[in-house]
Amino acid sequence: ADFEIRPPDSPGAARPVASDTQSTNAETASDNPTSGEPTSEQSPPAVHEVVINLRPGDQFQIDRFVLRSTDSPPTDAALPQASPDDDGVDLPAGRAAIAREIVAAEQRVVDWLHEHGHPYAEHVSRTAIADPDAHTLSVESSFFTGPRATLGEVRITGLESVDEDYVRSYVGWSEATAPLFTQSRLDRLQRRLSSTGLFERVRVEPPARDAQYSGATDSAAGAREAGSSEPIALPVSVDLREAPMRTVGGGVRYSTDSGPAIRGFFEHRNLFGANETSRVSATVALFEQELGVSFRKPQFLRDRQSLVGGLSLHRLEDDAYDEQAARLHVGLERSLSDRLQVGAGGSVQYARIEDEGKLETATLFGLPMFARYDASNSLLDPTRGYRVEANLTPYTGRYDSRPVHFAVVDTDLSAYWPFDSEARYVFAARGRVASVLGAKRDDIPPPQRLYSGGGGSVRGYKPRFIGPLDANGDPQGGRSAVEAGAELRLKLTPSIAVVPFLEMGTVSDFVLPDLESGVQFGGGLGVRYYTAVGPIRADVGVPINKRREDDPFQIYVSIGQAF
Image (cartoon, rainbow, N blue to C red):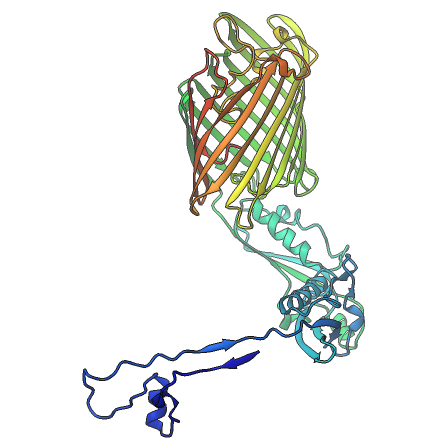
């Protein structure tokens, strides 16, 4: 690069600075140094023009990227090979000599060492030699690898009301198994303990580097000092601070069809010392009331498995049917990975149902099962990724004094694509396919039939209002349902977005979805106000192919995205 500093073409500016006084004035950009008392008639400071000319020159390539160990004795064998797979590290040899790529490669080496038993590894220095004739750069990076270590004793501090055995159930190793140290294992333990909701602070870390030998046995330290490759058993510190165990909360929602609804709950997350969570909740709306009690015991019998159960009392007055019901369920849920969850259990419910002016009772025993895969990046405001959920519930029991046997299959998929790196503009889409197998529509209790329409379904229509209607214009439900929808989430400011949407749904009396039964379309525009707890949603939807029984529009207000 060539640099040129060019002052104005004036004798005063070009005059050399020959005294301290002149130097001081030159630093303050003054061409007319004065002495004595200041006056208001002094000339203003001169403005200097600085011109910088840059010549990029030829681009250099990295011809060698060598890794060295600064350990004593050196442990170059512990450093990774240049390979993009899991056995090595992708090094930029043969590529353009870009500073950020070199620094990123060095960080990848450190991360690799942290994942292969070296908790104290760090980058020490770098030497780069340029060959101007060949336009190449030779890079040598030095690293302190430190001792090779296994995961040893886990030392837990900060517990008050939480059982230590419960915390240890998340650890996943013991001194007997002593797996090789990996930083990701400690990070995963920290995330899982944080997700329990029991702690406001979680720190999982090895001893500080200055104390790297104090946590190991004297023999292990001596072996390391002698250059032995035998790993040391490294203690792991789990420092916790418990959070409040009780929470009181609530929320509100509004739709033009159902009116306002208020929901409140009380939750205790540590009933017996092992994160047993019980929640009492109540929902009060104009046409719907519900009181429920739920229970969850995590780490039940094995890692990542929970015992769940609940009891609810429910009352509903709806265009489709009126219901008073009691439901009890119990089951097991298991996380097969951070994203995949499955569950199964049993349920029993008793309901008094009024449908088309006729009062009937239903007693059903069910075996609900589900599988859920969540690859999205947020629960309330996803901007990338996707979600898939499949539910299967076989039922047996009695409805209207006759035996019934059927199964409900319901699948849902949603996906999110950001148009920019900051996710200011997001395209979101969802779809649903559901069927009832094994019984005719009239042999299925109305609450177990399939419906479409409403704020979480097809906006612009009243809840459950898409599909066959009876002589009074009330929905009858069906044996299959299909829904699809898409929306654009366009942020105008960091806290405000507009959301145009288009959705469709159909319900038919056939087991397989039948689009010829009539497809209803809805569309509209929404506004999102983003808060710390999630977006507040306000949508106005209209039925595009409106029927006589449909309202001209629907308004929905709640917390969280529509899907």
